[in-house]
Image (cartoon, rainbow, N blue to C red; front, side, top):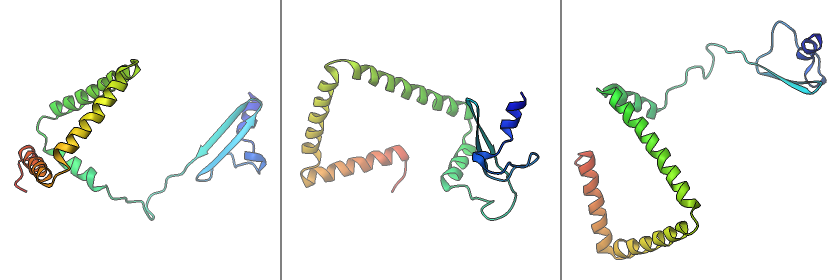
Length: 148
């Protein structure tokens, strides 16, 4: 027990020992006592000074305002938890499918084929691109209810 206390207060990396009652701000000492390595970290918080008052990012303010406007917080929290569980389940299903011998290769070929078809159908010719852009904008207006 006495050796552990002596090790705890011994000098970091062979330097002069730290005072027992107080530690300097930001001091990190690593001391090896036998087979154990002890790490001591001392940090001092100060009030005031430069950078003491940080502004909250704009996205956090927007999220707080949106949360304050919500009437049924319980339902929103439940939907959020359900979304996380659904995402976790989907990731698990994808990992299980990926372990099957032939299915990932077949799905990759299907994905490449669909990408080629979509590109040919909607992106190569200008009238098709314009129609796709109009469809995307109209769908966006339907979802958001905005007129822009």
